[in-house]
Length: 397
Image (cartoon, rainbow, N blue to C red; front, side):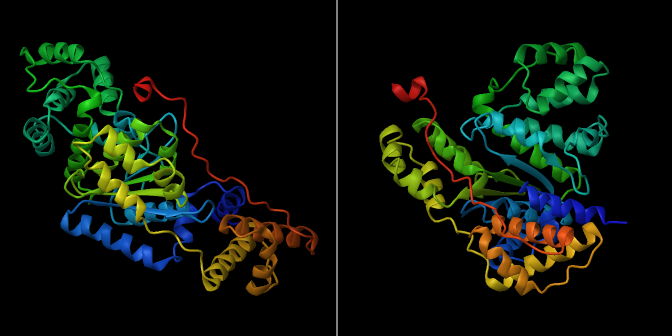
């Protein structure tokens, strides 16, 4: 019988769709950057030191694959992992939308599906974890909204209230008035905020709360992986600058949530097409002349981001050898050819790693089905563009 996992690997590679399974089995390439990432993960696990990094790469050269590899390494280190692809619906300048999407795509170790609310439901009122989280929410955050919300969540027996409060923790923020009503009903006490919560100003409290919660649950830290970061370049001018400010909360140790490691994957053309072509430093000096930090430091970091280098011939051959092995297991046959022959066949597949891989699979498909091979026809498509969306009113002012 054919190997189901091998079939999944081959079909994922054939389609070009990112896969965590592919990241698990193809993790040996680019040892330099993987050593750096491994060291940074160790800093979080062993010392609790938060940090973040940015790397860039050309289209089709393995940025998403690298993130999937980090995903698997983090889980093996008993770390919670969140995976986010930025988009028009989830732009980096709207941190409350980023939080909502991150929570929806948070994976606990050894879990194939996202979600952690089932673990939250196991926390009982007056337990050590509950008491620690309530003390943290009351004393360590900018607002104390999460103290009232989490205490209500732990003590309510009303299913509708429970659902509403859980939805808030997942990023569907409820208004202050209904929360105050729920708290008063449960405890016969009024809510007195030290600072009135608004999602546009205080969403960072939720990231801090969740990072502390994951530690109390016994995990070794929180890894946040952000793909398609180059889509920030399509935002309007002021929105881009605000996005850089938000990125600082994940990249610089003094601003990061507790015991977190964040990675942003960026297109290699971002420096030329956005930072330089759209004059980001000049924009920052004009729009925020008196408060250029931390956006300026983020721009510096993006400008110096290490780039994924093309794989060496030896690394490519190792990838092709694994593809050949998986193809044989997936379709129950023995490809009778050398890796060098397979490598030569991929030369017609273009220069991108992604197209070389697809060309190799097409070659093996034809050899398996017909016993001979014609010319592969894989094309290189999909260059990034950074055309701005229609400007917002604030950009026209």
